[in-house]
Picture 1 (tube, rainbow over the protein chains, first blue to last red):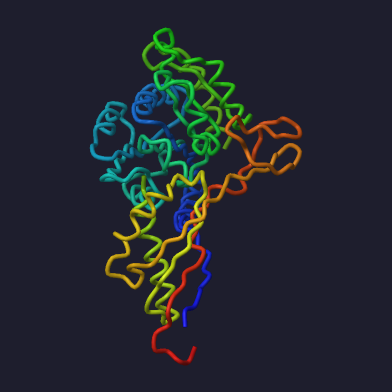
Picture 2: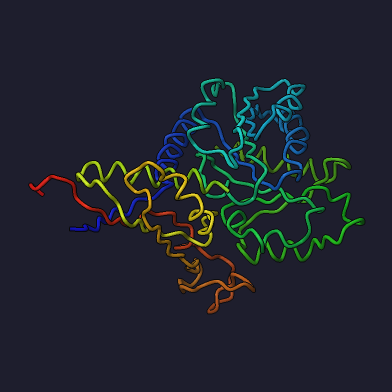
Length: 219
Length: 120
């Protein structure tokens, strides 16, 4: 006799449990955590290179967990900053999950940190489904990608609280429409906080870093 | 993009559950997949024969129901389905949609044959 068994099990349940353990661990250590999502090449690593020294001047000690598919190049780029960096090489996986972060923490001393950045794998689809125990999720969007990213990737934008628009120096050379993008972002979720920066011309980086340092200090 | 690993999780989860119930052959597995889950039904279907090869659900039928995004307005409480044009609340016009459905990745049920365990 065939039997139908109803199990109703969520496939992301394990990830959520581990993420909630992580959240507790971060809170106990007094570390604020940011999960950074973007398409490949939007400038996540460049933004970290610019942000870390600025928040350091404001008294914030930061560390980075780097997620990459194949190389340690981003971690190498960050090494001149002189901060703790742990590389996760996902060997083809398209996102970081909470178990990977848990493992990476065995190489990172949280006690000396106020802020931990998790640079996710460059991908706006899969990472949005995986809670990493972060306090804040941000999307970096670069002007060269076009204006329709928020409408095309609603899951990523709906799940974040901050959007940083990078490469504003390129706007004159692209069809990027800042007003339209800001309207599309707030048209998904009005509470998203947005910043406009350029890691080349340095526009907007101080304002972003001051906001970030204040957010970290809010405790 | 991670459909193969998701399907491998489905196979493992169903195998574990079936082992507890002494089910030895599975003919059908049902999933619910949200349209904002990041997983695509066709890719899940393509991955299933690979992930299930050599298991008790080899040759089983994989049935996927797609769950539409369903949201609730945080301002006025209205429940609605967002359109391609946007996520504004049709009642009060605010953009504070709380996702209620649409991100699920769930193994709903499976159908199997019990083995030689007449006590059940």
